[in-house]
Length: 109
Figure (tube, rainbow, N blue to C red):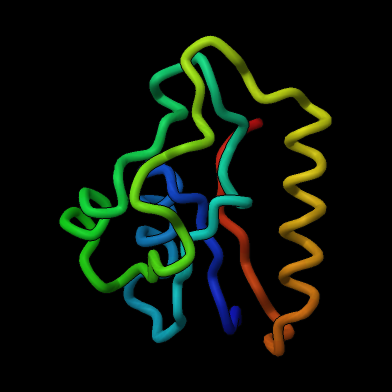
């Protein structure tokens, strides 16, 4: 069983996290590096931290994301190499955590 859940800060991934793990006694953290590729498409822009807190309450820990989505750009899509770098950064981050069983919830790249 997972000791920690990491979720993308996009609502669709948070909803998936809660559907699967919402009634389990495991912490769920939202991290920006766990998010899908972003840019150009409005569906890949995350809500403000304030809105996410009002929707999901304290069940998700949003301490590690900024108030606003500063990464999303209307005229530029994140490249595959940028997504790969972000993914590797996330893996590096998770390897330094004490938990042995960490689940990551995200949606397509």
